[in-house]
Image 1 (cartoon, one colour):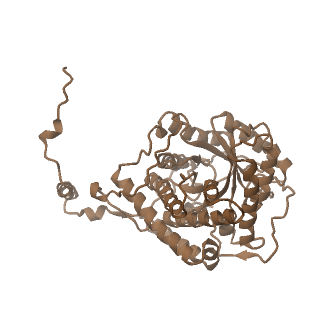
Image 2: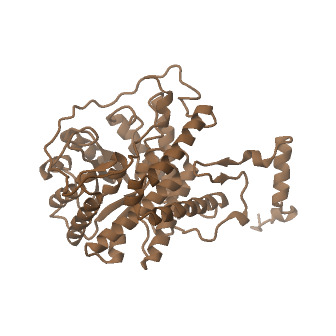
Length: 481
């Protein structure tokens, strides 16, 4: 071998798009390539063939240097109502490879850990090195109170990478009501955030998310539009509370949902980054987006719950390839009950295998240059930007929620998706197709909910209300009671 490179391709004529389509038509035996076009819930057409002419030059590339061994944050959610057992879960997750924890707080114990004080949160986080492991919160209207509790626990470590994740707008959108004016809750969160920011310079304060729209059956662009509108609302509140524009945006995390459709998941995470870039540019700052991706709950099934492992793996893949900074992967039993130690281990190890064995994070923007993914990313970002403009034209996210603008759009999308499942054009593995005749029940954790005393989140003034974006599961209509 003399090391000479043989230009094999030079012996072949470069095929044109027409040549490819001719081969496709021949294979379809009289059919048309148009028959292969599918559409997303957003109405975006997915073509069977993409080429250089389809790529968008405006795609925002995520080329930041990342830790090759830990390219994203493996974040495990904890919602066991028993604070002692929740603490055991947190410690086990961190010992087993997770880098951070997300504590869902609900003093009633129905949808989170039953804590309502700094002492209660201290039990949950006992033994956690807060200066090393990021602790994120999910506390609804108790967000400012919970942020103060976490701040008090971390007073010996001002450099702790905390994620307070205050997000009253998501609580308002999902429940359809707020204890006192929702605007007051936004102001309260911003005021507490600005105060804590001086003590914890590495902490993020607000989570701007469209997750409520997604879990209620909305489309990707409806979720992204709500996310963008929440980011603007929180940035404005932080600036009014005394922060500079740059610091305000630097303290906001974007929340994105990812489901089993991994290609659109990749595109959605990338589209969120593009939307953020356009917003911050318009506001005169230049900051990279920080994105937390959470696996979809609406995609999960109770029937043949083992198939959820496939969905969750696809969701994690989409988040990682899309460039999420933190990924919260649920357990395959979440549609049934609290996860056992085995289910939690599966959730951790799914991410660790993708990270450490598949090396998904070793390439900067691995989807970059793929004509299909670049095109869909641009289409999602453009459509979502239009939805965001409609929300802002309606007076902002609060007015859009109160008027039903967001809920009406989500309801229309949900109805179309439900019709697609009903007529069989969309399918649910293990539920509507390929049912497992030998379906065996999976184990879940049993924990009694003992409510904890907690401060009243009510603020002075009349309650706000909006049509609620109630969470759904598409498989629920086809599962036996």
